Image (tube, rainbow, N blue to C red; front, side):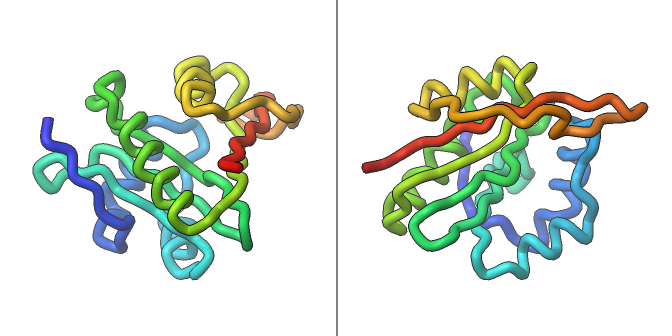
Length: 150
């Protein structure tokens, strides 16, 4: 598997929409992706295999802190290290940007994601009850995670 990283670009939005819809019960809209691309504080990376989008990560930088907004891997590529490599690439970039802390919310029941983040040194710092709204009005708890570089 030859994985190549690029900045998340407008040309990736159509495939990103498909992947988000495939993997998340309440995916982002095209408008949200376009707004994320326009925001100068946001940074995103795409993981490409033979020019096909396999996954992506989008985050926001605010002074010396950052927040991961979304990290999603195409179902056909899950379990192959794409998410791990994407997160590694993203964190390395943030470290070069002198980011000191990174935050994110992750669904408490998403065990693979929790294990991934914990393997990178993220630690639980809080919970948000009823944070995620899913289909049929169900809501889920989010764990708030933090990673410090210094």
